[in-house]
Image (cartoon, rainbow, N blue to C red; front, side, top):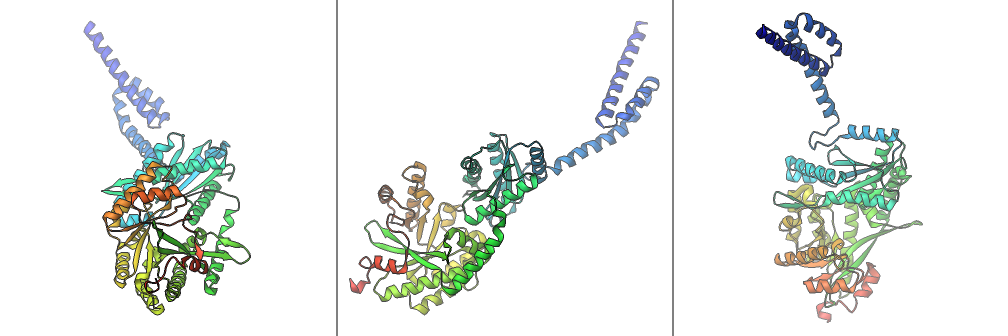
Length: 500
């Protein structure tokens, strides 16, 4: 009797367990209307309960796949970050709640070229590292980081600071996190970016407007090369203004109204080792235009080849005049990746020198390592052709590009210019001073001369001299001067050998 009771008790417990499992399965599968039916079956025909297994399994699978599709719909497959749809949803919620948020939009500069150079798998790994860095930094502020696609990221920051300066510092913090050197396959990579910032509801009342205005600010950062730009009302009207400015620049080039100024480079004994040709433009009745603005406009619009030819013609013809006047000094001209990739560029430079009777060694072309990322093989061939003609080359903006130490050996240059961003801070910042010192040592080990840009005070001069730097350029020596003023400055400092 006792054994029978125990058996019945065990059966009841087993039945209870089965019923519980079925009810939980039905509930989790989203089929709550089946619960009463399952209860009736459990009481009167428990042996039929297993029949509920198949529909429960089907319903549960549908529920699970639905959740997966929902997750995939708001998640970036590569980085695991929220995607554009998720950012839009979060921004809509913030706008509905009338909560103040800042949208920081970050676009990696020239990432497509880097992707093509290293390969798409390597590019994907870099994007994952960028995502992890941004997410780690955003966690401190409770911000949402999203990947919008390609090389574009966004950070939605709750309760951002009110002051514009503080907002820019916040955005620069994210940009600096992206720009921190990345060790990648034996290379040291530095990813530059352009960042735009817009604030809800200060700059936009809704999610769509906020994203659009952050994007407008980001485009302004790209054009001005400022790195980070805060949205300003009226920037939407920039497109017609840019078209007007571009038309005026084209006319100014046709009419010869763009000026070329010359800034000296001197050794520490005071001797002049060269000059750099720098382009300047003053719009009729509107004053000077920033070189960063109109050079960037020319580069992004396809006008750069015309601008480069204009400066080359002015510089080479000026070289001819100086040499006729007994002043022998080399002149450097900046060229862009687009110039180097032009068919016939090298032969065109050689023809121009021959036409003006100027030896090739009197002209120096300043390049940046970015050009190797545009079309490395074609660029290398053009540079070798230029070197074959006898044209000198200098690597500009050293330390700010991609994998400088590795690529330096591949560039046929004789001079390295240390970027002003390091030189101008080397007295106050030991890290920048170390960068300058190592750059000088590296260049000398490769047989290159070193020029420091942006020298503006005596202490920087003394430190560079102590480090063994070969020459300096900057306001401490002289500002960039028009040709006539530069000629007067050079007289008595530089003369042809037969006139000394």
